Image (cartoon, rainbow, N blue to C red; front, side):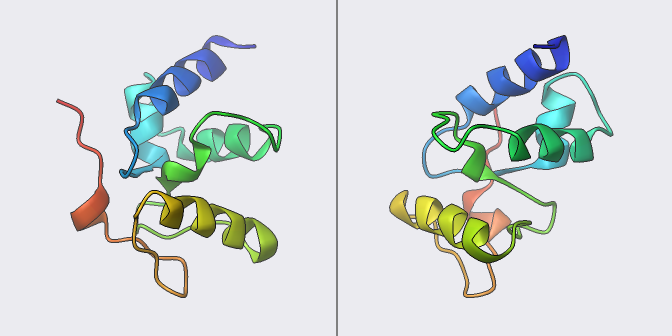
Length: 101
């Protein structure tokens, strides 16, 4: 596991239930500004049974970036935390964005 991986996982563990954050914000908080795509790639390789809250990470427009069954899985996990998700997979960043203090 790389330092990048460790830092991203640390940030993921901090995201509170019922909140979301963007890939870019995770990258910046992990100490790697501009590495949003790398965060996405790392999360896409997590095992299906991962306990990390990967599903709380969205693109900068508040949209789920996944397609098909993966989109539905992420949407279901967000809904389970009372996060409203549109039919197209969009979340209101205004209402649910995590802003660490």
